[in-house]
Amino acid sequence: MKPKRDLLIGTTFVVLIALLAYGQKALVKPGTDAKVQAPMFEVDPMWPKPLPNHWIMGNTIGVSVDAQDHVWIIHRQGSLEAKEVYATTNPPGSSCCLPAPPVLSFDQAGNLIQHWGGPGAGYEWPDSNHGITVDYKGNVWIGGNGVGQAPGTRGQAAGARGQAAPETQTTGVPYTHDSMIMKFTQDGKFLMQIGKVGASKGSNDLENLRRPAKIFVDKDTNEVYVADGYGNHRVIVYDADSGKYKRHWGAYGNKPEDTNLGPYNPDAPPAQQFRNPVHCAELAKDGLVYVCDRVNDRIQVFKKDGTFVKEVFIAKRTLGDGSVWDIAFSKDPQQKYIYLADGANEKVYVIQRDSLEILTSFGDGGRQPGQFYAVHSIATDSKGNIYTTET
Image 1 (cartoon, rainbow, N blue to C red):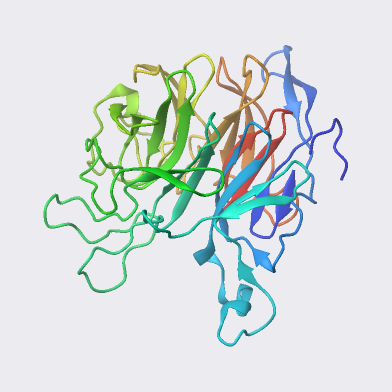
Image 2 (cartoon, rainbow, N blue to C red):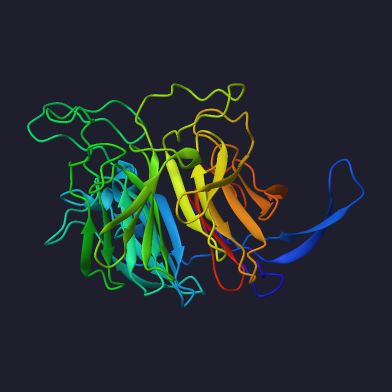
């Protein structure tokens, strides 16, 4: 489908990478006669192009756009079903298909231009990939939310959706394989790791993470902000070159705690701590940090030093996986709009950034182009296109 103004979205099997056509439409605020403008989008069902080598993608768990408007995604090879990867058996059960490498990069036309990832010399790959960010220098950062299995334990380790895991003997904190983030070149050369596998001591551990969800790098200070995340209950900041710890905070700027808050209750007073997962920490141009407190159905806004500014609840009665999965900002100089991916209600909200008012939304649950199944991550390019991935 042709875009309205040189802009597009796309879909491929279990992943929707959305490039959406950008325009404006007038909306009337409920209860008033006032009209507001909101961006308008249109799905491109043919983006990206089919992958070579009989490759297919599994759960696609992150998306980022670099300075050249190349679109980077990371996916989970292990999420593919046996019938999807018959070609991996010995002997091959059929000619199709094979898991694509975990990290893929596409040009604006949807052509695959880069691929790499997986275990390698000098580092340990995440047990469960989660999140990808290309920073202002062109470096590629990844996280992971895998529990894994503690060395020396027997039986099956817990999965990545909050089940209990084997506890360590020293800290009492459940064992977590993915207690690190990693930095690579765009060619896949390993550069740095912050945190060590299986070493997390909880939400006030300054050296290790615990199932970090997403990363953002501030070009003004060269600091890396981590939404940490599926095991911990905080935002933590490091120097992006040395990995030196800078600061961290929990909800409302409080010192984070690991007390189990129990299930989210929309009628209870707002929780004074983040629930798991703390799913994003995005820095706007004006220095405000927007944090996705996913299961608490809210965005919390902070200054760079962790000072709390304000919050907004989105679809507050959403239970289960929560409503606030990921955000991206519009590409105008003021970043006037926030685009919020809601993987429980299966839609993307368009939000006025200064007032945090929802202006409109698009999408619904389903398998067709423009519909979503667990829309997970979202990013924008320099032209105003939106890209989404699904898990």
